[in-house]
Length: 490
Image 1 (cartoon, rainbow, N blue to C red):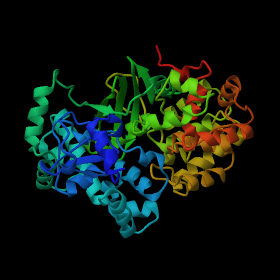
Image 2: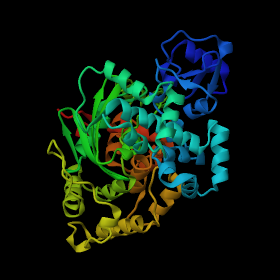
Image 3: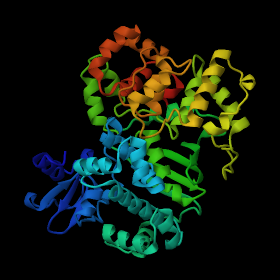
Image 4: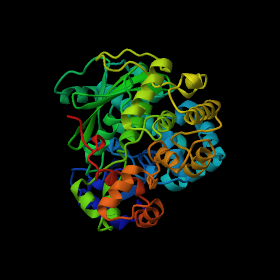
């Protein structure tokens, strides 16, 4: 979009928040870059230039605006809606792969050479993987500076910087303030003191957002010990690269309150990225709803609760295991089966609030489980043990940057994986916005009540007009049934 100057200028002049994250406005006279909805008086059109990413702005010598804080915008919805190599690379960079494995590790996961990845990202985003990772490190550093009392030296290494000098130089260059000045400004604006050990921040999203199906689904399917709904917040444990964490997510007007407790602050970037993915916060609800409204039978559902998101996951491998446990059983039975696995194979954790007890077991931990100990039909035991073995030995890779088509093919080749299981994993674990579940009982009931075709083949044919947002159509069709997944818990 950044190449359409006239459209970008109109968005800036109207201060349209829908375009935050789609592009960034750089002001040639002040050398500042802003989000489109920046509250200051817009500059003259001749003084504006547009970039596709904050990293590209920073590489061109612009610093972040202190008023609109463009580093806190939602991410571009393109990276979650596309399946090409650039989108896959962005999802992996957001999950911290470059910081952990370097550019060669990123390239290996994508199946390209490092030079090809660099060239593709430069062509589309105006910045290579190292610059994009550096921009992300700067955002992480700012969160730690403003929300914790950690010493600056610890923050530097927790954010992924190789030295304190690089940390200081980057923060000054990006934000035009020294780290100490950022902390002082944040302390002046803070109304109440923070809780020691807890990182409190706001996760922005594009309006509208209807939280009922999103948090209702997560709460209704919560695995005891790993997840819970408490005091208006969804809480769960997180398995992260350097340790574990506990997060509490509370829906609020205009943002999601996020409270993180991390065993290692180096995991902050990954924790934020996974929470955003869990709640599908980088979606473009206006584009989705406009497409679905074009079907007159879906339009009333969209108008009744616009901005529904797809409830996703913080760990694709975890969700795949849970999808198998949920085959042909009720929500309550699936939770019971998962809870047994958690108690037997999950790692215990300490929760200060007392409700969470374990991390969900890793594929490696489950690879050695005794099939006879599973209270499941024999065929489903085989399905589960084959899945965890493939995940544990790396022959099946379900991750943020996975190729959706390739992952579907690999899943379908496993015993016991039919279309429903493959598509629900594609929708919620891999994040494919066009995944569709025509054989799902709730979808067929909803379709029948709306006057849509109720047979899988006919419904799939009708759903062609909903592309590329069929996963969101699933969320609206599920609302026809009065099921707990559609409502915030009392």
